[in-house]
Amino acid sequence: MISWINGELVDLWQTNQKFYVLINCQGLGYEIQILESFFLKLKTNQISNKNITLWIKHIKKEDSDLLFGFKTKDQKNFFIEILSIRGVGSQIGMGILNKFSIIEVINAIKTQNKKLICSVPGIGQKMSDRLILELKSKFKNEIQFEDEKDIDEIGIKNPEINKIIDDLQLTLKSLNYKNKEINTILPIILKEVDHLAKKENNLSFENLLKLAMNYLDKDSSNLAR
Image (cartoon, rainbow, N blue to C red; front, top):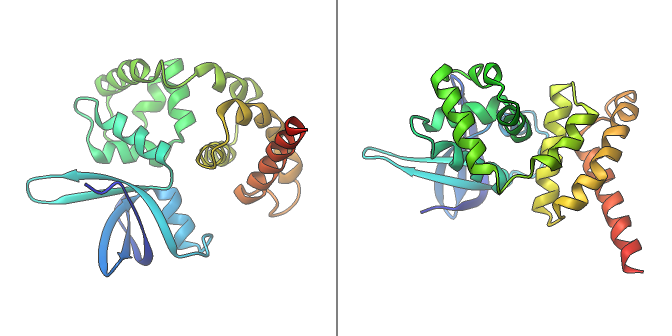
């Protein structure tokens, strides 16, 4: 079983709505299906280091072995939870994460937004009902909806900004910042979004990440005194 992989990017391509990378790891080439957002970053050279690491969900079938790669462990775990629902296959799982951020899916579950869930290709009314019911049950102890409430109240109307904020949260978690710390500085970051958006090319994931880490590290320094 493959849990994660680190290697050199050899090639990337798109087949219909599926996005793939070929990674050379110690002389072996691994063909991995990835999310569209990461594919576009690689294709447009937004990621300069072509030695990449992916969290892997390995699905064995009678006639094939399928690898699905994610930049964060949270994305991988969310994908696994989606697959555990009866009738939901890997392509629907990837379709959900291609179309929406994790926060958007959680909010759709919380508000029972069936229209949003049904907008994913391959998901009908019955499947959306099952997704909402079972995911709400699965995440009621693991995801604190109250933590998301602060973000909802501020309101993120722009889906691109929503995606950046979601990626920002996941990255900060992977850097071992605590949820409480992250949720404390998110309102500050969101207030900076309008300011950065007015400056050409200043609103980016990288700029917001630096800003968030500066606030978090500053708070940690103050507590240590």
